[in-house]
Length: 251
Length: 52
Image (cartoon, rainbow over all chains, first blue to last red; front, side):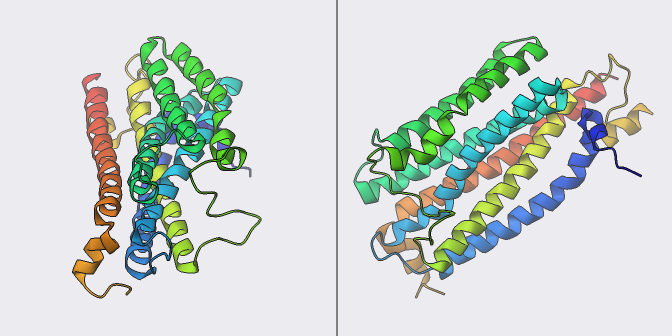
């Protein structure tokens, strides 16, 4: 017997599934972030060039990676939503945007905290920093476009197109340190070359990244549940609420 | 353990202000996001009950 995955593309069917997944991702996030903080702040040695200011990397790089990764995932969901005309896909895109914007803000802020002691400036108009700032404006644009259009289907499409067009900035951010002469240092980790950092530092950074990733999934699933409750017009269709406490009151 | 004392740990080799600001603001943002989501969920659940 085959398992029908497509039934979970119905928001009300996905609602309880998302609820079951959230605790697992939350626990995974808490454990890996705790381990990452332990290794990064207590065990890893200091950097011979940058001193202990380098420890900002343990929040800066995961936040920056998530800011780009979440943007791509958001755009993919928007694209799937437009291709298949699937409500849940647009809801996922809607749920991802605030978390992506938050990590973009954090990448910029922690970058400023790192830039001041190492470069002597909170901010420079360097290709990496500028393109990441543009990413923050893109998230803001995607979210504002949605709230500015009353018709939900048009809002989905408009913000979806906005998200898809903006994907062009992601490779620009990623390769900016190679394409231009930037004050920002090059990639710390690459698929093709040996890591440029000590093992303990790398372990801490990867733990934090994995933790932020799990955190993002948990938060996005939590938010998509809110979006489902807000957007599915349960009364008009005379459907029971997927929230158990409401469903009980309704029965 | 890399650090000799708690004071050394907090000082972060003189970069304490920058390092701790980064970590604390990141933590506050993430905690705030989770709390905001709880409030939003409570409101959404209340709303779907009010629709009854």
